[in-house]
Length: 104
Image 1 (tube, rainbow, N blue to C red):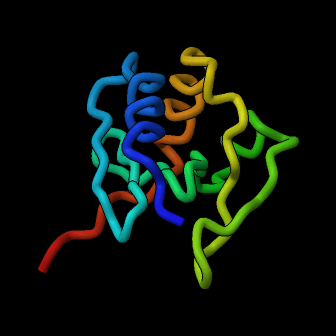
Image 2: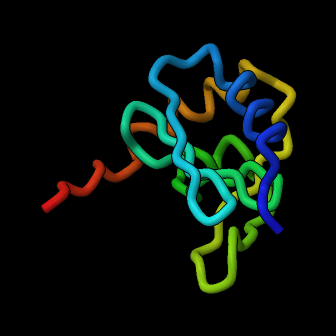
Image 3: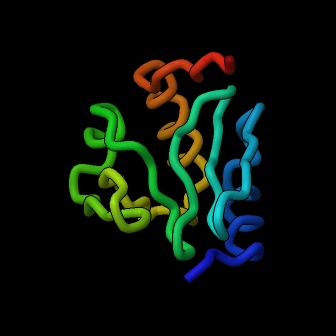
């Protein structure tokens, strides 16, 4: 099942306090970038983030879910209504995220 544009718009609005949030559509889903780094994405109308240590610390009860068949597990963000929480989450995750790969 593909994610809806409405859910993407909702998540982007919730992340609007952060500068440099971008996204890319991919096979009916959306990859979310913060300052050029992949933080997670929207899969089946769920906001999932990479399970870096800081994200696990902020969401110790979060379930690990598969974004799609064959992918690595990611953390489900339940608290999507709280803009301040989302801003803090992405800010603390940023340093732990890998730098974007250089294109050949």
